[in-house]
Image (cartoon, rainbow, N blue to C red):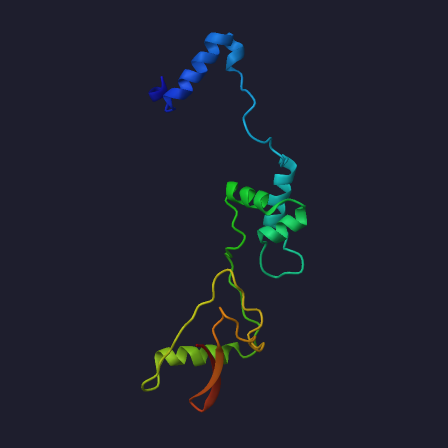
Length: 170
């Protein structure tokens, strides 16, 4: 029977034992072990609706488990479980973000120019940001060196008569 139904033989034995002992009453679902469910269906619906339809307050990026937990009064763990159960990933963006930097085109030309026509003996390093970290203000001065933080130095370089600034971690 277990093979035919695709379940464990122990499960078949448990249900047979219940039927022998209590007949049809033994086949009704019993209380499950562990703590009872504390998140109501309405709360789950609220989290899903907020995630899909509302932007987070005072932010221009995405919901995090912390911000959603604060907005709904639920725990981060509950939010994480709901998102996982429904396949929601608000940290993954499906849209293209356009830069509002007035010097964006000039910066793109400088960077692409280094790849297309590099100066003799040039070294081009590319460091991507982590997906969880947003560089909100690149012009802010660097903080003092901490034991686990690399030192940062700014260096000027000249390309086709224009001066640009590169930042290097050492």
